Image 1: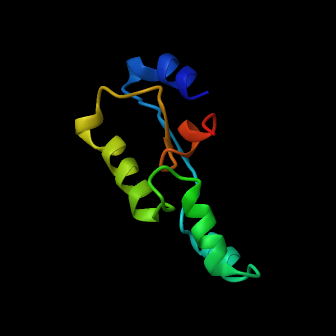
Image 2: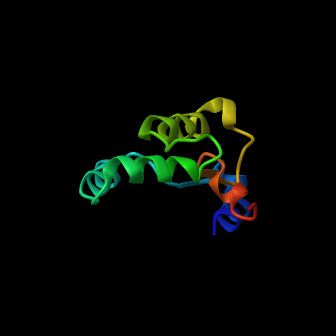
Image 3: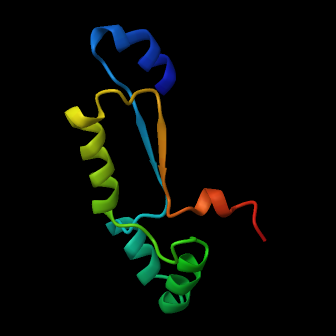
Length: 94
């Protein structure tokens, strides 16, 4: 859909990009961690599955969205940005 909107409406000055966040430290996720039987172990384990060795912050997602909305990103359209600390890139690795 992102690419279709970009192609169909680019001539109107409309850009369309998508942001696909991974594990982000939102209130919902932080509550989930705190309510798990062993929150410290869970926090360590969730960090280990990310190549950057941690989960993301809402500010990191917001920074990408702000950039994509800025004039400096005027030639960027039809893209999906995965913000997951490299997690999807690591899935195929042992």
